[in-house]
Length: 215
Image (cartoon, rainbow, N blue to C red; front, side, top):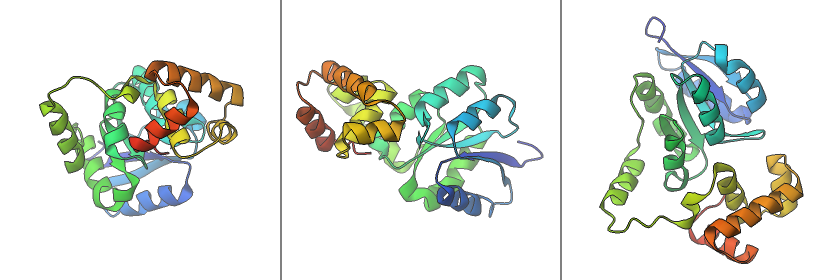
C-alpha cells in the first residue's frame, strides 16, 4: 500500500463489469483503480512491472483462464495479491482458484455486497473467505470420506471445457469461446472422458449438469 492507499487493477473483458467495480470501489477513501485490462495478453505484458498491488481477475477472459493466469503471474511475482471474480459458484471453482494462489474469490452475483470487503482484506495480507466458502470448507473437513468428485482431478482448462459442455455448448461454440480449434476441443474431451472414466459425451454432459458445472 502507498500512503495507506490500495492500488487496484481490474482485468475483465466486460466494460460494464469494470465500470461497476470501479464505481463501487472508489467510494472507499483508501482504494484507487490504478489500471484496467480487457484482455490477458496486455495483462501478461505489463504485470511484471505494474505498480498495483491487488488484481481483481475475471476467471474467464476471452484469451485466458484466470486460474492459469494466476499460477503464471505468481511464479514471477509471488507477492501479488489476486482476487478472482467469477460467475461460477464458489462450490465449484473457489478452492481450485485458491490452490492456484489466489487470495480470494468473489462471485459476480454478490459483487455489490462483497467486493469492497474482499479487496480490503486481501490488501491487508489476509485471505478473503466468504461465509458460503467457509461453510464449504467446514463440510469438507467433517466429511467421512476422502473420495473426491471426479472433476477435481481435471486440469483448469479441462474443467473449463467440461463446464462449457454442461452449458450445452457445441464443439464449435467451445472452440470459438476459448480461441482454440475444434480438434483441440475434441482432444480435451477425450482427456476428460479418460480421467473421469466416462464413455460418451452424453455421460460427460449429464455429469456436468448433475454437479452444476455450467459455464
